[in-house]
Picture 1 (cartoon, rainbow, N blue to C red):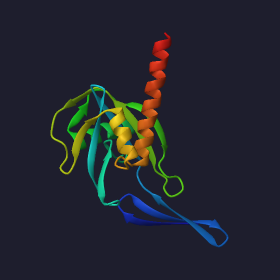
Picture 2 (cartoon, rainbow, N blue to C red; picture 1 turned 30 degrees about the vertical axis):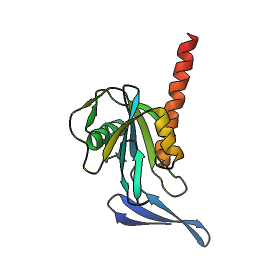
Picture 3 (cartoon, rainbow, N blue to C red; picture 1 turned 135 degrees about the vertical axis):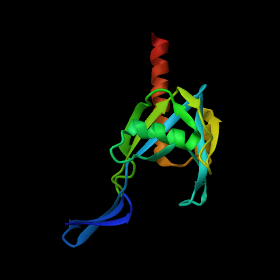
Picture 4 (cartoon, rainbow, N blue to C red; picture 1 turned 135 degrees about the horizontal axis):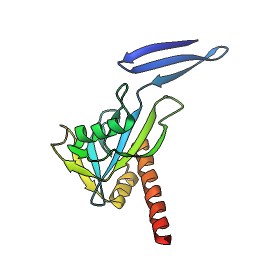
Length: 171
């Protein structure tokens, strides 16, 4: 038997019978779309205060996928809303995975785009930065870029980019 408690629109606490006298609790939340934007070999990063950790965090543009919205469309929408940059192409898929399967049922849909144009200012409360790969790795080491899903997407992008570069050098 399962009990579903709505905590906030689209956020539920699920209480599910697990064993004879035990229950498992998890959150049902919307999937997220993450976009890794690149401009002239630099990554477009956002920084903003994250209340749950009470500090400024660096990450890629990201947000919930609206009902009936395609993940790649959501990624492009979040890029525009947060940074003021528009992707001129449909973002390319990197990977999809469960964010925290022990406590949530949501997936992260990760994309990248290299064709961007600035059309407006960033969202209020968000600062944008153009950083190199090594600068992001330094932020990760310093626990300033510390969203696990964003780190996974970043390293997936790097692994694919390194594989493509290796393949091109062999040809």
